[in-house]
Image (tube, rainbow, N blue to C red):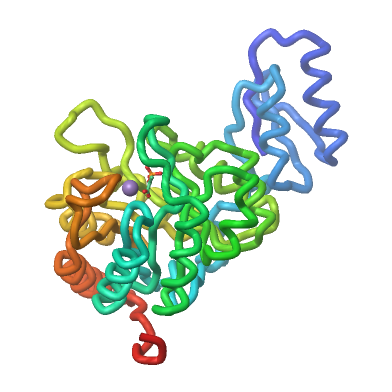
Length: 346
Ligand code: PEP
Ligand code: MN
């Protein structure tokens, strides 16, 4: 590891760095002619970088060496493939997740689930618990929403991706969810990240709308550090200054993340744009940048919904997106995982 120290350190400050190095089993030496560049040789562990970074004497870690974090792409380490029901994310496999923003009636949920399954989705999305900006907005059907998801999952065979907002709900949501969704507003809720980490079930972690990519990856690290390596990152747009779109899809982030982490990444073109007519082009852009999947809001009657109706696409538009996904996947030798042959259930 290579540390940059602050200038003019006191003896006590320097001793704090050297003491920690000894404690963790590193030998320390200043690079020739320097009092600021301290090279450490030693074991390397995911938490060591942060232990040094936290010291007041350390202004930065220039090279983490072997003290790599669990999310890092390392030479020879294969891409993580996260499997959720019939779906697979990563390692050349692309998954399509589709469904309403919020779970409302059973009839609508079933109609949407059948429509998206028929058009290529392997996972159904939909929030029973909704993180709304206003406390007076619809907060989700909650327990009744979970019951609806459980019924629709049984009838369609689709895997369920649904949001959990509170560590106290992880157990109840986990009884229905095949994949926990952690929303943008909760990306840095460490208690929640630890709890879904302990649940050892796939996690779809959405990027905070003002989070740097390192903050995003360290949020994933919370889940990984609990022994749960089934994390899929989700780029859902970050806050910009132009009100024409709800958010700004950070396509560069997708390409960058593919280089620095072995974790799969999906794109959410619905929340990124906030406008139904922009969902398809953003979905194409995300996949072309290397995304391992899409999560898309689909609703046949968007005028009736309590949340995000303006960005919901209809099932036919989803069919086009699924066709685009197959064409883009083929360009670089990847594959969109298709839903299993239907008929067994409904
Ligand atoms: C959602 O997926 O409906 C949602 C609330 O997304 P985000 O957390 O990205 O805003
Ligand atoms: Mn939504």
